[in-house]
Structure formats: C-alpha cells, structure tokens
Length: 93
Image (cartoon, rainbow, N blue to C red; front, side, top):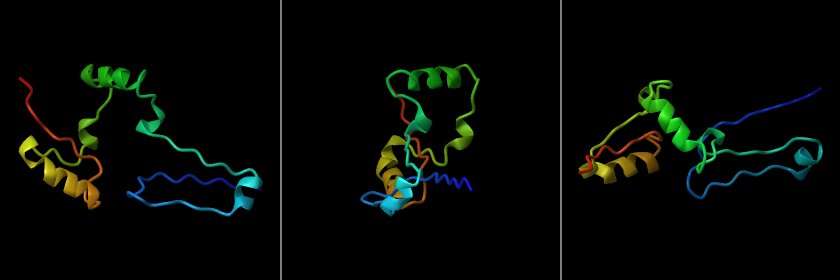
C-alpha cells in the first residue's frame, strides 16, 4: 500500500516537527517550501508581474491591510495567529 500525506501549514516561532526515523527509512520524505515553492531571486518578480497584469488574483487572499501607522498591530495579529496574510499599506513618495 502506498501511503502519502501532505501537511500545509505555517509553523509558529520555535515550534519543531518530529517523526520516528523508521518513517523516513521506509520511503517517506519531508519537503518544505516557501512562497509556494517559488525561487525568490528569479520567480517572485514574475509573480508580481502576473499580479499587475491581472493574470492572478492575490487581493482576495489578503486577510488584513493595516496602515503603516498600525504596523505593530499587524505584527501582533500575525504572531497571535489571528492573521497570516497581512499586508501593511503605505504610500511611498
């Protein structure tokens, strides 16, 4: 029987994941990704272009958009587990 499992989550600061070595010895493997597996130097700018061209919707994924003056509240929400998709809004001059 081929057993597979996938866990998609964001670990809290300082949290650890553990398993029995036998699980890895029997063919299971652990992999991780950041930015959905996109390579930061080469692909994040491409994703930004897709967004500005209207090819992908990112706005509906953003949970909160506090203004720059409330940046500390944004971080408090993220570290408290209330929001993992917060974007701080600011105006650059």
